[in-house]
Image (cartoon, rainbow, N blue to C red):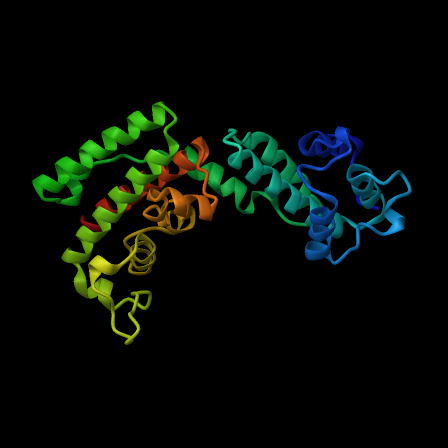
Length: 276
């Protein structure tokens, strides 16, 4: 029996909409597939039907019969599906609900909650001073960067999350490409430098933002926080195409935009130090 307190069970019941007898948007087939793939259990087995045959009743029975670890794994997946569904339906994800659920899941799994979530919270709370003059940019490029930063702030105030990610990604890419021209040897000799099919280092204009971030971190220009939290920006060019965004199921929200903006600020601060 999983060590779930009554209030915790009620919490997950509310999140997953179990009062209806359903669990999120699962059909019988997809519900069975979830349990089979995540923990190798046949949730359609009669032993999970002692309270009734609905998906919600089977999930409650599952809580009663299985261990903390098994229940934790399934709840973790369900929580991620809930988060994904919120974004897919263009709803703002309540990160307090998500974090509270994740704390319960981590306890069941015997993991420390503050490993990743707390680090992201701390990262968002950090203040970074933006001083473009320390980057020694050419006057033309500096003006463009300043204009885009102004537009980022306008987009943040108006909840234009996708636009924030486009702008943050393009600014960071521009700044890092500028650094490749200043320090070509350092970038080209990095172990993370991308190679073409012939095994040769790609020309800088062929590098993706992901390549630039990885190499800049390896050679000491960008800190680990930037590498770790920049996932929402790395493929920003792909999301410019609506079809690719649809295929990628990328639905940024205000939280994603705030992370991207904070990553850009941190990157500017780190690059400024590299120029000192």
